[in-house]
Length: 520
Image (cartoon, rainbow, N blue to C red):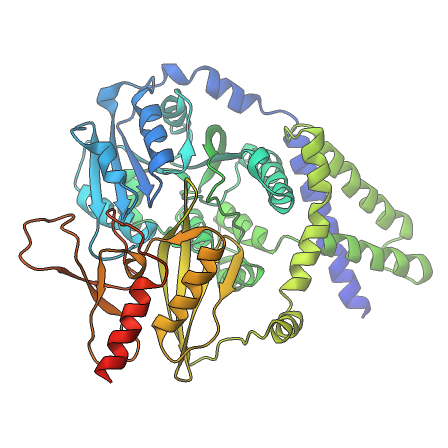
């Protein structure tokens, strides 16, 4: 027991010194201010601006206008817009627009950011006129000097991650707490680490990288937040660390913005895999790997409470006064960290609630609690042999289009559908046929004034009786987008298209059910 407490104290004491060092270093960020001031005078790189969009028509249109208004020489950058199975008419933005190179992915479903960008990079891999790539999501907004700032940052770093600014006014209380923490984390932790020359995590929402490094690695990895963390470690391993730069700012549209944070289990797995190489001569990689096991606020507070009590009443490796001094040092360091974190008084208030939120989140996701909660709700955890398919869909709510997901689940001969929007989920009850589960979901959404924009809810859709129970296939009776086709286009119940027109409630699905009963 004594040995465990010794190791615990050494760990949190070292983290306290590390946190204090970051707090002191973050008090002055003249380096970034100077870089910003003289950004217009740097030699210009040839930039390839890559925009990824999936049903972001409104924000994409705004982003394109802002890119066309950049103060960067027009001959030194090209713009590539990837439209990943967009069904909101995003293609219309580029009619007769020769300035934007459009990659329109359709007919194969939504392939995702990682695969879409990989396809483009393969096409551009032999383009020697490109010096660097600038990846940015279509839900972002940028200033007129964005590319000039990017170019200036590239003189000191070859891989860069930028700051994401979130408008708190459009968020609920829980999201405001998470947004305040994210702002604090960026303006203190990530900025201070950058000032010390330490590595940062890649963020595919705004990410800049030299083409030579992409060629060296072979690709980028933007599947999810965990893969981005793994990719960041790979960059550090080959001595091309990702650097955070607060000058490179994007403002995010909060309608479909997802707060992301790597899972603790993933961080621990990555650290475990890095252990054999921790003692290499690559200090940046070693430090980056060790930083994966940073403690949260509750670990620090409980750890200090246990050690303070133990050192007060029992013999310990150091005197009680030293333990108390290190705890006070941690509190002072936190106060210093707030000075240049650019938080408002209200945001500091939200930040103070983050430990409570993190505790509730931890309790809510504890396996035993989750099992009890699912029992109360009548929801069962999916067995290992369950078949599940996830598709991206759009739901219209008034004048807004919301990006959502549908999980088609088949288990023990029964079917159900899970509807996901941000952190909210609704799962239908189990049905014999998938169309029955879809009927339940459609009626549920209709009760709230939402329209599910998929083929089976479109007036142009006609079910195809193929003898199967679920009846997932159908044909599209619309002449869009190819009126020259001699016969209707085959489709599936979850597909979408730009020419969506909502069917009358229950009409199409009822027709599917009736046709299935006649066939039987």
